[in-house]
Image (cartoon, rainbow, N blue to C red; front, top):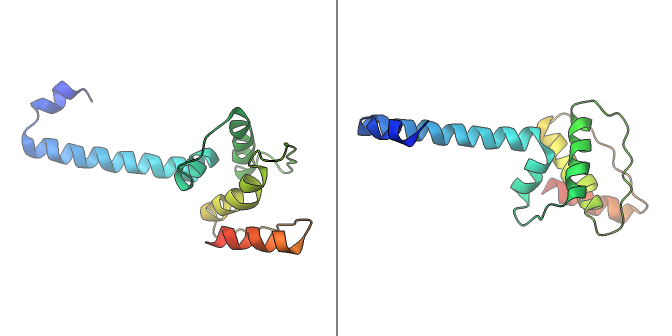
Length: 122
């Protein structure tokens, strides 16, 4: 709504409008966090710096969550947030969307699997 129209409203209507606008903004943020993996990442990790490869992997994870992708293999060089995304943030986001979801997580060592599992539960 244009600011000049809002300014013409009585003060009590302006106050009510601002409350509703804030609720809408909050709901929009919640929907983004719930329905978009990268939105979730930015919400839980505010210091995160996004790169092109993050957008690509996030789109694949979004398609996975919608059921459009059944199998996904991620090949990326070390230190590109592959493990952080796939072993910690993706399971957290998926379980947050569907609390009864069961996820099997495997790693090459038991210690690594336990560490990611504990981190996800925090």
